[in-house]
Image (cartoon, rainbow, N blue to C red; front, side):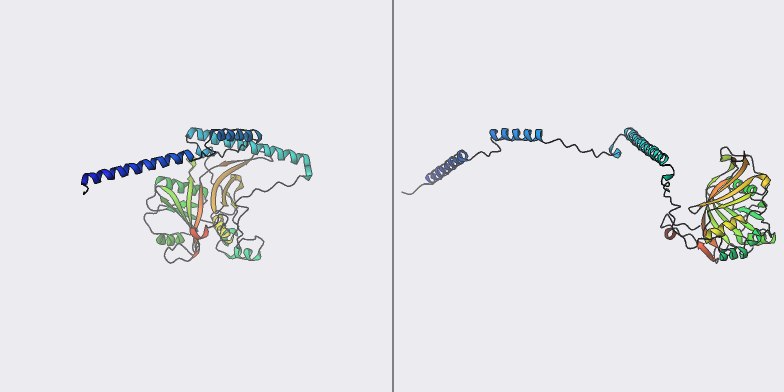
Length: 365
């Protein structure tokens, strides 16, 4: 007899059920025969715990210093407090070390080693080949024949014209007026829109020896052109940190008409020597000591600091000084041969910042 479709379906279902039962029996046998690893057995776990406790009791504890940084503190006030505390501790350590070395030096007496010289940018300066030796015969010959030798030999008296850029503001005008009280025989004239090429011939006709032009930017003096007449040279400076007399604390009375003494400090190279002689030629070379006034040009790291003081001798050892003002700082930008000529002038020296300022220990004055 032929099998019907119903019988075939029933036989297939029976076979599937029998196979599933066989598979489940096999899995149960495997589970029974499978071994539990030692790590999972409770006895083994207890043994491992006992061994770890024994090792912990026998080995000493190792404590590392915490890698802590003040910058990791999120709270600003707390961070500032911790930083100030850190600085105070450092200061105490430094003071204690200083006292210790002082006691050691006192105990050793004359046998104490010399004090170490602190390293500064000035004493670590890169040597310049153009450094001037005052006793050099060539330098002495150049000083006797340069443009400023007549002033040092008292053959010519300086006469300075001070002017400004076009339409100056009040601060620049006051600065020029105070410069005129510092430099003897100086006269202030307003520019009135004239070009410098037209101003220079008029200065020569009226026997002026120097032309000083104060430039300004945003109502503040920011530049100074110093032109020696009649044949040059011409120096261009950047002006900064200008303080007028009214802005200075504990200043003295206004300066008198006496010719001041001039101090030129730290102009050591050929370029610095010529710039220093140019500043010295602004003042007469017969100072009136009765006025007790001193004009100082101090060069430090190519910045020229100007100060004007009055001094008084309190006794044989003590001297009191009183600043009169104004004060300002100059930075040399260029030195040009001849009188001012922006188009066809020949430059002796030009400050190129990206090329010349590659090292902080390299100075030019």
